[in-house]
Length: 272
Image (cartoon, rainbow, N blue to C red):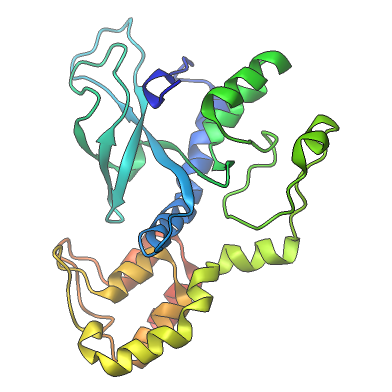
């Protein structure tokens, strides 16, 4: 079962579905932070990563649903918009098709999901759909996705290592044990952010131009790290002389990027 087949119907005024999408938008920053670190790994850690976005045609018939929510991969984000590649073939929307490049405002996001070692993180609307399925259908649903999901009311948004429970453990209903203190730490800073501090300081001493260089889109490293919520990296860059007043071509400073995603610890560093 491919992403193009993962379409579920729901009413546009379904309060639970609307609440699930709102929670996805609120926590999207953790998806983006994980994706930002994935691109620096020598060996990939993510099995899968995608966002769900709502699409509509101009002048759609009143009989059609207001939006068709479909999955998008190869995700990019500038703090204002989501870019990527549409995976689904639409059921009724005709303005887009599978394989099209897309660019939509963040407000169009309705869900996100990624998996590490076969375990799913996020997936708020997916878990709501799962909660409405009989047990046998839920097992078939999870098998089609090829992921291990949390209980619908226990959705994890950041990866925390757990001891595998194995087949027998799952059969007996055992759940992976997550250290609440480690979860708390990982919510604040990604483990890779903490681990790279010394190596980044050394790299900046050898190549001071890294602090000032801009990429192909006119962003400095400070812009990227502020949007991704990497507080320790932001602190190191500031200590090395990074300019927090520089703006992206879209007009965003590192502070406004951190504020857009609600990274309070990064905002405090940049306010100083």
